[in-house]
Amino acid sequence: MFTLPELPYAYTALAPYIDEATMHVHHDKHHATYVKNLNDVLAGQDALLVLPVETLLADLSRVPEAIRTKVKNNAGGHANHSLFWEVMAPHAGGVPTGAILTAINATFGSFQKFQEQFSTVALNHFGSGWAWLVSDHGKLAITDTANQDSPLSDGKTPILTIDVWEHAYYLKYQNMRVEYIKAWWNVVNWVEVEKWFATFVS
Ligand code: MN
Image (cartoon, rainbow, N blue to C red):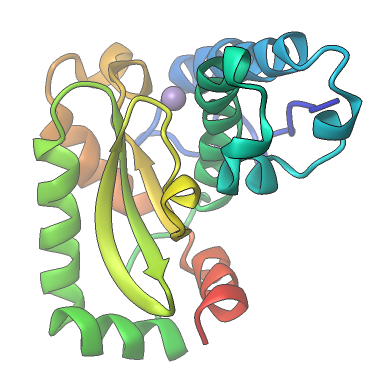
């Protein structure tokens, strides 16, 4: 069985950048529904129900073909949101330090260039989906995925992500995805991102 993780902070904690109403509907309704649908579609598949959701996404071929798309969508919805909550925090943002900053500078030229490139990918993603900083076989890269697809299914390891589905920002920012992305940088939890980086890249 998969379970909905609690937010690692209060629903109000990311305001004014992400408002309380958005956090409630996003976590309690959208994320909760992916978890419920994943459990429902895997009912009776005991060997799959005990796998970490990341393992499931990394090798979807072990899922029976008749339910594979549904599993991909809902497992992705669960894993993507779980990471999204973790890589945000109140009193965060700014510029990272340490090994991840060194790697970002080496890969993208500077932190500012990384931020611009990531924001552009997030802004230009057509329709619902996610922008990502990933480890692609040990090398940092920026990418995007449609709907609830996970980079794990392409053999890449997520380090940082932003949800650009309209449900992530429409209540506060309406159609202004660009304003949401700009605000979101203020809640990026670089301490947590550094941990993911240390685990999977360095
Ligand atoms: Mn979402």
